[in-house]
Amino acid sequence: MSDDTPDSLIPYDEIVQEALRAVVGRVLGQIEATGSLPGTHHFYITFKTRAAGVDIPKHLAERFPDEMTIVIQNRFWDLKVGEDTFEVGLSFNQAPAKLVIPFSAVTGFHDPAVNFALQFQVQTESHGPQDHDQAENDHPLAEPVEDGSNVVSVDFSRKK
Image 1: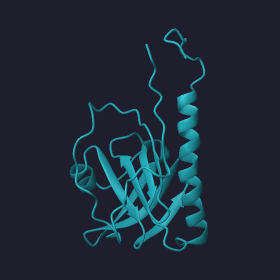
Image 2 (image 1 turned 60 degrees about the vertical axis):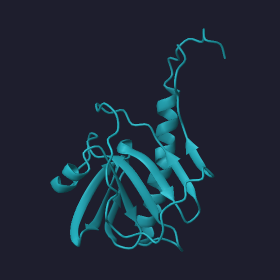
Image 3 (image 1 turned 180 degrees about the horizontal axis):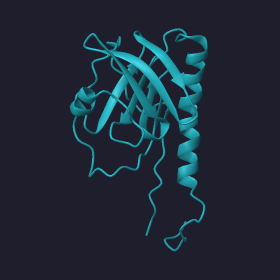
Image 4 (image 1 turned 90 degrees about the horizontal axis):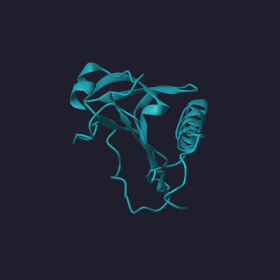
């Protein structure tokens, strides 16, 4: 492609991002339908805490002012998956919490059992990511290995 390529009037990047987020919704929907995770599957889901539609307890929003990673593995309940959002109950320092997360706020999805991962772009009003601590829910068996295999990253930077 040349540098003279015109900007597309079709928002391909948004369409692809939406389609890939549908993968997350479908996987969570299957877990909701069966009521449990199959085999050793478990999920790390990273999302923007200040994105529109995110509803998390105030103490979590204060602790994770930009981005947060949750683990759906051992202790989760009331998973409800909608067309645009999902809800889940998790435990943080022995205290139960309900989280409502729009798929549009999700920046990452990783299933370390099969080393499958998706990364997403989220349009926010923040001025860049801030460092944050990992969430302390569920205590996973092992940290995910990020060797790049089975990772789908979509970056639609436009040349100008």
